Length: 167
Image (cartoon, rainbow, N blue to C red):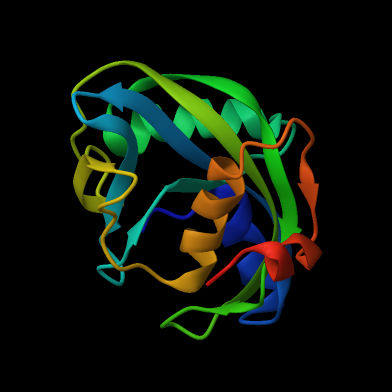
């Protein structure tokens, strides 16, 4: 997975210690022939299906990160409709021992154009799935999709709303 230069510079100083970073998730929707569809990418690092996600670059607005990552990872153009969920992730421990925790901005996005394809090496597949036919994925990614599909007018804050979702 390509790591931003600023993170590599930080890692040179802190080693594997916890880094607090900002992230953006683009849950990209479109109208398909059989109803709503969501664009997912199959991550190259662990093979998991997920929405498009990325690290916010210094000085970059999180919604711009969502647009950039959709283009870089999946070759699609999107419009960000709104912030759906602002959440702090559990700590993530990567295979190399690096530990990171993210403040994640999950955006409801609309597909505008482009045929999904993995472009930058972060994904091995990119394609649309019907919302009722999503592949298995880690809970943290499924929750971001649930937050978008809840389609509330206000952004969800934190994790408390998850208690309301039937499982």
